[in-house]
Length: 105
Image 1: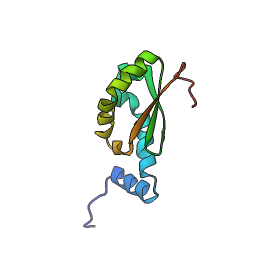
Image 2: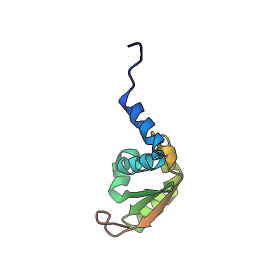
Image 3: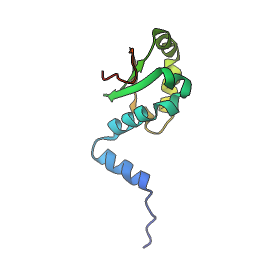
Image 4: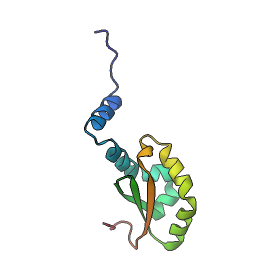
């Protein structure tokens, strides 16, 4: 009875790491939190669609927004890496896409 209660988040994190899924879990967590991380303006024009082998793939609706994000890439990476598990993202790849909603690339 003298043990400290374990926080559920810490327990889940431990289980994920022990299964060797830490990087994948954290990368996909970044995908799901993309709008929160980059803000509503960028999220309206660019969507995180995939995480694999440390690479976060972003589909961007228009070339002008792709150019804007290319200029902000270091700042975006900094924001990602400052979030829990964000260090899993080693690189961001930007892809042009005419329909962000139906992009299955």
